[in-house]
Length: 116
Image (cartoon, rainbow, N blue to C red):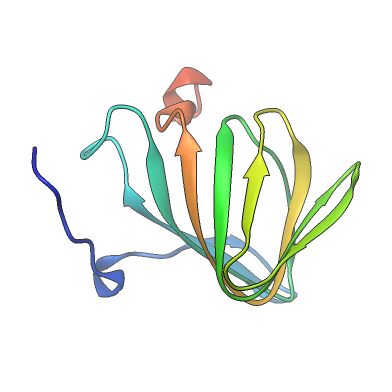
């Protein structure tokens, strides 16, 4: 397989939370392209989405303010910041006009945990 350009215009955002506000995620890289990772874009605005991550995750804040609320406190990311999230972290994704790029490993975490 060779390198591939994935246009934001081709991504399909899926609802993940709200109201109030909204949270949505679009997978750009999945099992069709990689056997090891998954990656995509997510948007969060005036919402709070609780989750326990079943994978390691890296978040790059592209725009807005992105907040990750954990039992250890709140991490607030601004454009250009990177946040590391280890597997098993209980959290809330929040944001104010936030767009993030995320990468998760393993990319097939849903299959591994019987969620697909």
